[in-house]
Length: 58
Image (cartoon, rainbow, N blue to C red; front, side, top):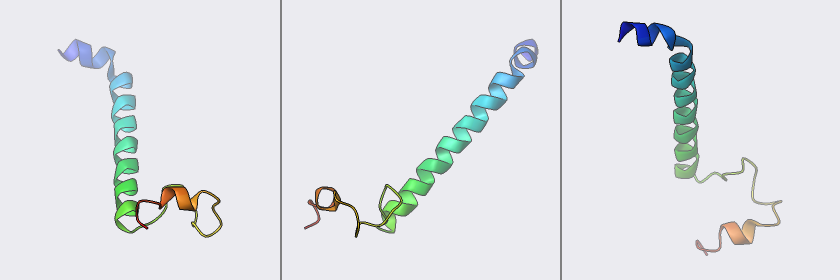
């Protein structure tokens, strides 16, 4: 088991870093959704598709 970890340490560290990044992205998206912010990161006032995004809310 120890030999496996030593041989694959770089891969394991990269995988853990990517998993952490994905986790933080998901947390950020959940926070933005709870606050009512747009998923695209910009305001809806100038978006030509705002009626499509918010049609269920109206």
